Image (cartoon, one colour):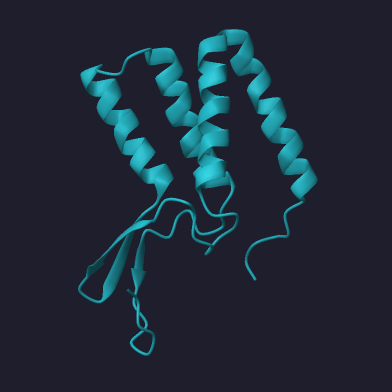
Length: 125
């Protein structure tokens, strides 16, 4: 296996420590990030491969499956919002989207698997 075992306690402690400098910069961004992280954690699957309360968005494209992870959708909304400056309460909204993106990347091992080659023997809905 190419990946080392990850110490879960160390990650949880580092997540808390990452929020402290953000709280010093802006409480609005900090609370948006916390809110986005915990709402996303509540609505998404408990671990990789488990369905969440909201169904995943995935498309079949030829021999591949395109999975639009929630962190990727959040990133697209964030970039669009930064470009067009349309979000209400921008600091809180940017924090919320940042929390959503952070949760999607740091909670799942398959976060980078967006385009997946289909197995011909396995049926994918």
